[in-house]
Amino acid sequence: MRWIIIILIFIVIEVYAFQAFRTISKNIWLSTAYWLVTVLVLGNFIYQFYGLARSDFGNSQAFAFGFLIVFLVPKMIVLAVLFSEDIFRVPQAIFRYFTEGSNANIKYLPSRRSFISKIALGIAAIPFGAILYGMFKGKYNFKVLKYTLSFEDLPVAFDGYKLTQISDIHSGSFDNKEKVKYAVDLINEQESDVILFTGDIVNNKAEELAPYKTIFNKLKAKDGLFSVLGNHDYGDYVKWDSEAAKSKNLEDLKTLQNEIGFDVLLNESRLLEKNGERIALVGVENWGAGGFKTAGDLKQAASNIKKDDFKILMSHDPSHWEKKVIQDDYHYHLTLSGHTHGMQFGIEIPGWFKWSPVKWRYKYWAGIYEEMGQYINVNRGFGYLAFPGRVGIWPEITVIELKKGSNSA
Image (tube, rainbow, N blue to C red; front, side, top):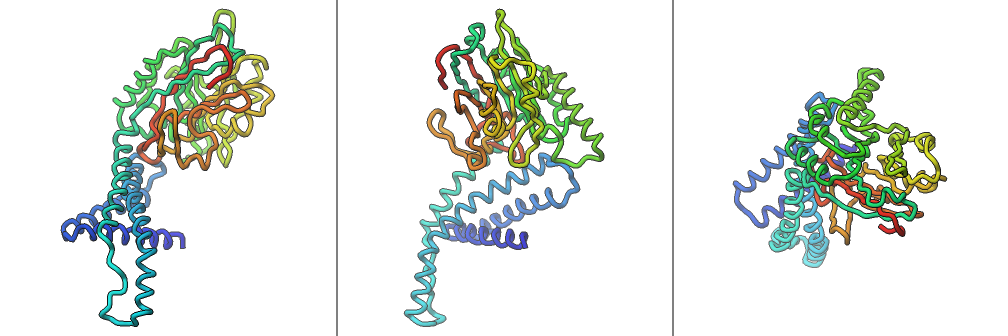
């Protein structure tokens, strides 16, 4: 039944899209090309997802999904515009039928207006171009976002301390090493005191990271590199021959991160010291609401620090901050998260407006938020997953400078 409904919806979308196309073009060759492209895109999607014996979601499947989105979303917009016209056309046809009587020579349904079809196709061209750009350029359109946060109880020695946060690398999705090298150079150009990575370095398997080890091991910060695990790092989304194989994958992933230079924090803490003062860096394993892994243990992670320490928490999923961290007895001055990717799709005008459908799933989904005198930054992600692109929500490198003074965002 589910597939019957999906097929019927797809047929309706195609009927309306082709109506718009035929309204403005009667050329048989263009019509043939339209259907050829449609069949190729849909056929490739079906082949990639149902014609291959694969256990992993690979790049070829991602692009098959991406091209389906490229053509399906604009057609859905055409459907919406033409259907709005039919709200008036169909009642007119019914009225004429009952007032003029049944007559095979009478055309009861008014013809589609050409300008309506042109408007529909013109509107549809915007997401068509934007999604294509997102697949080939936008996914590597790295942006450095800079914030200054002030805290009255920040140790004096750390006034002006800079940290760079990256998140959600998803190395298994990359298809251009030169772009990744460029991003690593961009991170190093920030000359931050410390680099913090907040999880999901792979899609599923440690082997995805291996080809990029010599790129990411170029990351440098004088106080070191630290990381935590995200939900994808545990290998929960693929089938394994055994639990032992799955456990080995996780250990291999930790080893690779260590070889890159990351100190992986597994429900534990580190102290960053400067001129006899210190701040606490706390890292938890993944804790996520809504069915995601809840391996994070905040109490254990903070067991070796003091309650009055200035604290920076690394926790992959922002729902952890919302559900657990804000109300914790310990005051976590700054939490760094990722996970949402900003859905890799949205509209954003820096400093003024941001929107993405992911806001319906996550209250805190991108940027800086403040609750009860505590801050969180939700990084939009360094890489991408499933859809092989980004539209409007660009890959992010966050630089946060800590200042001593009255609280401000």
